Image (cartoon, rainbow, N blue to C red; front, side):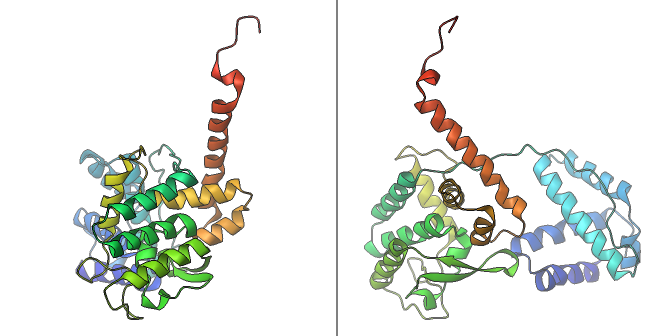
Length: 302
């Protein structure tokens, strides 16, 4: 079994170039399936059909797995079986079809431009040392002003200390995209670089922790959690919400979906289309708050 899992892990990491987190989840799902079956080689795994997947999901649901997590588990298992069929030399490498659980679609909730900037400024002010405050401000402005994921911003190296008008970002699955950098973001990064006490070598992380090591994502998340309540933002105002806000505000300003897809680094346009619903929801909220007929209930007969 270990040989099968090692090959599966190598395929996910080296060939499909998935993130380490996704690789771990997919390998663990495959491991759980193998523990419940008699399959010991690719031929045995390839012969597993929908009933085996259904039984595995039932066991996982009995452990309290949510619909969303069950859907991810099913996706991982179907990918594993498709790979097994290819490795076993089957003519049909398609995984067994099985309907997944229904997932309630939730829309990301953006913060306003003023809230995003206020949040970045406030977190910068909360730090005891000036350079860490400038660091946090620069990171958050990258999320909101350039639409980066937190992991993408923290993966920048010292070669980006003198950042230009654009930056090449390596996102999920090793997908590369070019992102414009606004003057305000360039100024924020320059201020941080000038104040940082650590040597920002080109091959070392740009954003550093207190002792000089790579800045931890958890520290940024914790800082936002502490400050958002103080300025009246909800619990869903997370670092990733700033990326959602970037997308929503660009769409509201007239950006087309294809351009937005490229800026966000989405593999499919479907992932980007959700922001059309977010923007429509924002417009509806604005209408309800501003339209005089929405502020008071109409008299009978009106």
